[in-house]
Length: 197
Image (tube, rainbow, N blue to C red; front, side, top):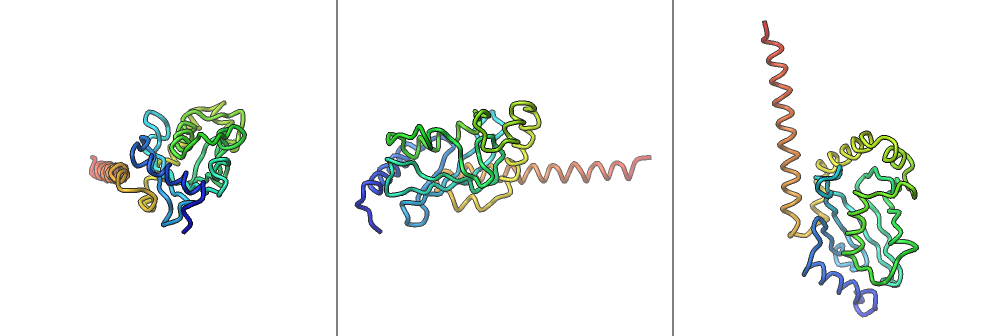
């Protein structure tokens, strides 16, 4: 593995910075031993429709980094005005406003912020943009469906490092207990109906 190119040196610096000062709700690391391909998990921001979700992404860097941005792609299914059906992200800072001053933490923090603050005037998903503008409650309902789907995706554990494992365990336990409560509620309702006079 070549570690001497400017892009690889910069990625190692970004990795060191991420370990020293990890952004809240974000976890990422190189895939296997390939410094040019990173796995990331973004946790849905609190007090938003995305709260409680765990969303997997990949970041593919070229030897032109940091002069050129990485290709960013959600692996998790998403419903968002600025995320294409294939998982690609439509974000100015990853395209025409890119600057080499951005590091991995800044990229992922921008994407996490985008979840809460979409730009429906530059849509990658026209249905999500329309609902966001015209019917926020339906938009939020669809987002909550995506969040709930993320609870059942236990493969997310492959994409995190140990310092975020506790967050994922808590989210998955919350999902498990919600399922148990739902089952108990359904059984109780059926029991009461079958034994009512």
